[in-house]
Length: 491
Image (cartoon, rainbow, N blue to C red; front, side, top):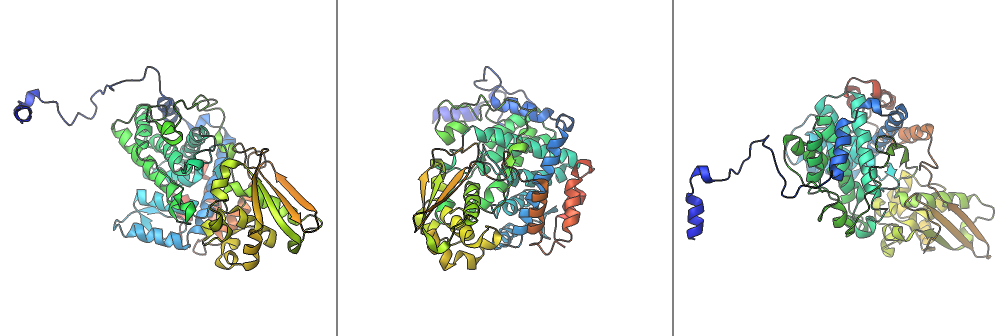
């Protein structure tokens, strides 16, 4: 008690001030002996200029932005979109930032959250293969919101988008597709770091400010896969929350708030926390940085399902076209899948065999294969209530089994193979080594445009899909984002 009294009564001149001046020099307790990964990434983010990015990367980026907006438009009238909007409105704050396919305006961070819900809500958005991150689901809301907030040109906004994708891809690839096995959702966690770098870039933060932002993000990033057990909606929140977390961290770092220096390689850094790996291999994160652009490895989705299932859907379509195919003649079906994917799309078996919601179905190998074999395709219509309850489809799903696939190329690509055993002893087989939409098996621009129009047509409140296409494809020459934000909202 006496010691406490002495401290309390010490003269002002002897006390250490609690609030340090904003620009006062800061010395870390244990400064790293060499530049950290966060420092190196931050230096790249702070110095990135549109002139250093190849024109082809901008062209590809515009297609991904268009694809993201199309999936968001298709989702904009869904029940989860309405409920998410109601929750944000219940916070009682007015705003001026637009929401894709809708007429309301929200505060900046709420708009980014809602736009992330929309882009990712149907699980129809792009995925970077090696990192297993839905890059655009957080990067596009961040680009739209902070780009409008900062009044940047369309080319500057696309630069920030490309930066977010680049950071996501490089940080996510370190885990080699194993985060899901541990219950982590890379899109929510890794996406926040990409958004922090991109937001810092848009805000004009210094490299130190962006490095601090990456450290601060370590305390803000989140994303859990427990939704897989009961079809809950939380996955839809992850990318928008990543944009919110990244922007918030960037604002703090830009203002001078100090973040951990070793966000990635530290004793309690990202990878030791997520992977329980005492010596994560970070050597490849910086390889080719600024020369090799991850946007070209970012895959478009031809089907509204977990990307792990796309090869199986294509295999089912192929088998359906083979001579001798007959639904009534099927004895059982064997799917060959990488072991790291089984827990995501094959288990728990009860939920996968009888999906209770579209989300259940989108993560069910059994249902996706059965529905495709029955109907010949797998689109948004196959996720409607009547399709989910189709007795014949559910009976066929009961015949789907799986085996570990030693030939799978995961995570380099999302491979898959099917063997359909007929009652007469014949076997129909198909293998997809590289899923359609990946860099080695790409969708062309015309495919992306066709997908966009189908999705956009579901949002009948949109004034003109042609106007939105023109705004996106003209982004690299636009002086601001006004035409884009105007074209993407509802009448």
